[in-house]
Picture 1 (cartoon, rainbow, N blue to C red):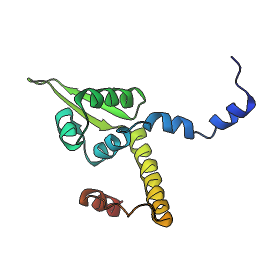
Picture 2 (picture 1 turned 45 degrees about the vertical axis):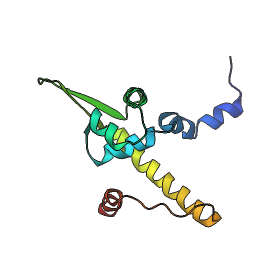
Picture 3 (picture 1 turned 180 degrees about the vertical axis):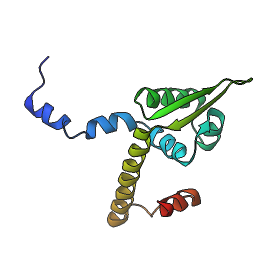
Picture 4 (picture 1 turned 60 degrees about the vertical axis):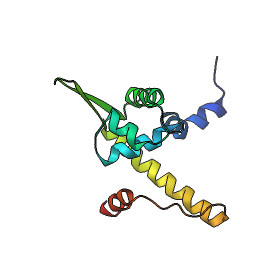
Length: 129
């Protein structure tokens, strides 16, 4: 099937590619949690209230396949696995953060939502950068 010129042009901006990577309910939140520091599966599960183990596992695998999350297996007994952001993941997290700030400002300007209070860890890391 040959793509139309319009479809080709629409895909060249890169937005669709980025949204493919972060699409879904949990991926941007996982990116945010991992930007704070590398984490083990159980720690992520505890910090992401409402996510099932199955969904977390699937989302981590997809993020790993997209090259934004690294899975490090340590040769210990019991075996330890940590997840962290790759350089591409850190870069993507910065872009997602900027998009989130835009969304909050838009919601405020439309009067459709009160500004969301960021956790202290987000505020501290945002002022540190």
